[in-house]
Length: 189
Image 1: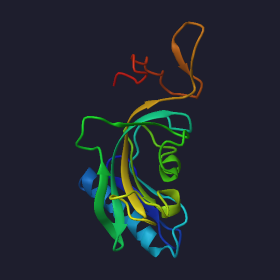
Image 2: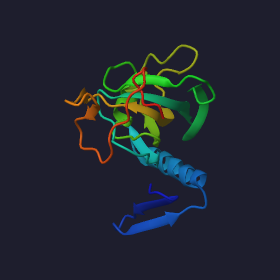
Image 3: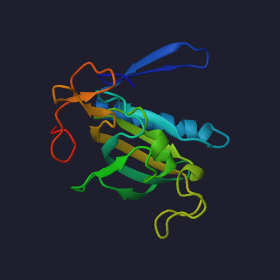
């Protein structure tokens, strides 16, 4: 996935190809189908499949960073997207999570690493990285492969400390200064 509705990929001869789509939605839909095709062509899904839909801006998130996320989750059924089992997209509250804290399924912890603010990613998560053999009563059957579209709306870096001038400083190399955090610890934008 590249800016301005471009996608690039390699074919089986390692030749590089580029496609420009008419709209951001068309580019995202194509990327989702590529990820679903990868899943359907793998003999056994034993790790999380990640496909960027939008890259976002700023620093890539790491373990320990706090995020606010909009998401939709589907069951993977009949080789594609099945029933939606969870979503907060049309709700007022975003999901707050701290990467690496173990409060969300392992597939999210793994699949969201490297995302940036404003980024969207498509995740296909095998049962062992999701709810496993127990599932979730009434929502996720046992041994279900799950699909999520996640969007990082806000980020608070874990490695922020107070500099000698009293301003918030990020210990990571950053091309732009960190925004001053608001009272809830998230930047005002």
